[in-house]
Amino acid sequence: MSTKRWISAALAATAAAVTLVMTPVIAHHASGPFYDPDKRIEIEGTVKRFVFKNPHAFLFVDVADAGGATVEWQIELGAPVGLQRTGWTPETLPMGMVVKVSGQASRAEGSTGICCVRMTRQDGSPVLSGGRVEEAVQPPR
Image (cartoon, rainbow, N blue to C red; front, side, top):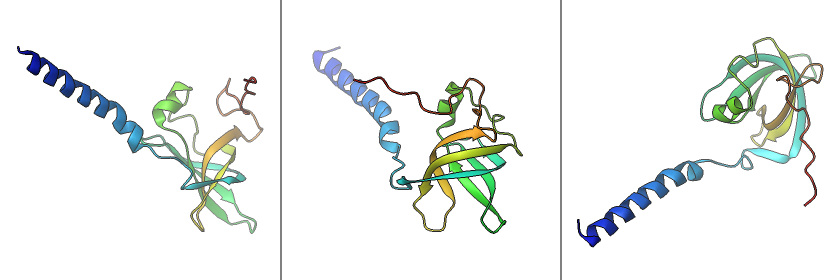
């Protein structure tokens, strides 16, 4: 094989590798356009369903509003593969479980969505045994 062919093959392989690595990075989005980081809200409700599918897991929770009516809230969680790495499974949040959620409210007017959440059981304990409720304090740099 000539030197030109080796160089062409190497360049083609490099381009293919860069494309494969960069596509997921480019395809992912930030939560800022959809959820307001300056508007944190807290809710407590009963798990209606837990959808553990790509690209993000979603939790649907029934919450009583100020008038006593039940309102369904949609909670956007991380990718299932990331959740699995920390011990989550599709059975982690069974229907009927009461959870407390604190997170960023959806920017969409009239919607009941939350992202970037901290979640606990009704008594304030972690959803997963051994899980943290608060973020660990980072050491000074």
